[in-house]
Amino acid sequence: MQDVVQWLKDNGDLKVIDEPLDVELEIPHVAYIEVKKEDSRPILFTKPVNKAKGIKYDMPVLMNIFANKALTEKIFGKHPNDVAEGIEELLKLKPPKTLKAKLAMIPKLFSLKNVFPKRLKFRGECQEVIIPKEEVDLDRLPILKTWEEDGGPFITMGQVYTQSLDGQMQNLGMYRLQQYDKHRLGMHWQIHKDASHFFDQYQKAGKKMPVTVAIGGDPLYIWCGQAPMPHGMFEMLLYGFVRNKNAQLVKSISNDIYIPRDVDIVIEGFVDPEKMETEGPFGDHTGYYTLKEPFPVMEVETITMKKAPVFAATVVGKPPLEDKYMGWATERVFLPMLKPMAPDLIDYNMPENGVFHNLILAKMKVMYKGHAQQFMHAFWGVGQMSFVKHALFVGEDAPELEDAEALTEHILNRLSKEKILITQGIVDHLDHSSSEQFVGGKLGVDATGDEVEEGVQELLSDEVLLSTIQEIDASVVGLKQYMTHTKNPVCVIAVRKERSQLKLMKKLRVLNAHIKVLVVVDEANNDLNDPYMLIWRVVNNIDAQRDVKLKSIIAIDATNKSEVDGFEREWPGDTFCTKSVLENLQEKGIIDIDETFIKKFGLLPFA
Image (cartoon, rainbow, N blue to C red; front, side, top):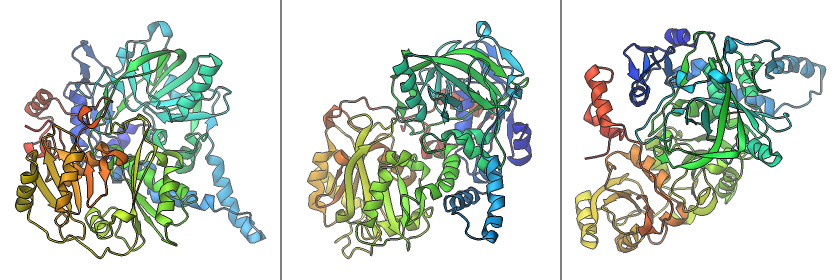
């Protein structure tokens, strides 16, 4: 994949946009809309500009590289399931006992030599152009500003290469990087990540930490950067395993970190552990803004690049996004690595509208009573699975995990308060709903058994049930029931919130003959007829310990929290597109969307 753009033209139906478009809002908005289409394509913006700074960039911007499952599979060169099978074979490898078995193992062992990265002694294509420190200017790069309220422009597909203080461990991560000025970047490595652990080592030693950021090159580097590898394992090992060839690395110009020879752009520098700066806000992949927070700062020493570089970027916000397809590949590849801690795990799925860490569905072979609860604790105790907030487990007789309709019906027919586990644990750095950062409620549902015997006693129509509820509380302004043919229909109500909804949920227990599962959402910016986005909202907005009540009915408060709830942290806003930008892009014929599309994906605030 020496020429990624040409490869995408040949294999990915690359869309080329030659119209000059602004890196602030315009280009990100186009990519954001494209990735939500059924026939999503990668896009090359050949004439990026920055109107506010008066810049015409001399390199194109490439976005939506992982545009769909078929293209993701082509990038891998094989189905991710095939990669998983290879990993599973490796994990099950045992010493051969016979000569025949030894001979059969030789090809497998021989291929493993390709896994380990190869350090070259010469410079790479990424170092054809070298910009010294005195000439460094990050404004030469078409760094995007995605959302109107973002704290500035952000590098969104930077491959961040770091190493431990003793140089024995190297890491590749993908963290957003805010551009502060012409020579400084904010390093948003979250507290639980390997790079942050390395930073702690340098901080204790009182030494500056070298960092090298790469952009572009083989798209598989990007995927490896977000792969949840075990602590201490260099992600480039995974690249070698997938490609069956060594990653070829070259030494950075100004530090000892090695990076792939064929990336497009390299930003080298150091992080002073004594210096921190406010980073954010930033519209993130949760669909919410992450708030301002102090993070380390990278002082850029050198920038190198190919003679004709391409600037790779992504856009994050409300699902579906490009990470839907990257996450699908990750989910498939890492299944074998989960099985040693949960041997009877059959499969798992992390739906993109659960923004991955907020919701996991798992299918398992049930061997004994309490097995599903054991799995819950296993998932919550290991690696990046420990960040999962809500885990739903089904037995081997359940439908396919990606068959949302059938699976939901299966779970609701087996749902009971007695098989819901609520506990506390670690939550993702980006989680906004927990009362305390980094620690919050966890919800586990055991739906592995037989169907429950009792269903709703008397099912009412939406109109009658809404009228009945409004007699109890006039703040309820809308209602929609889902899966009314199951034992546990889901009743979603919209409210004009002025007080804690825990009081409302308590009052509505008297309707337990008509309601089994109650979900409360704000009237603002929620469509009760859109279950996809309702799930996104609910799993984002709840802390199970605070917001889920199991008395009489299963009740969930998925409203935005504030001081009326005793919530003392700042509650972030949704990521919304800028209306004038959408209208301008429509007039130019760059995008073609209607009001239905805008509302379906929550592009703009509801009227």
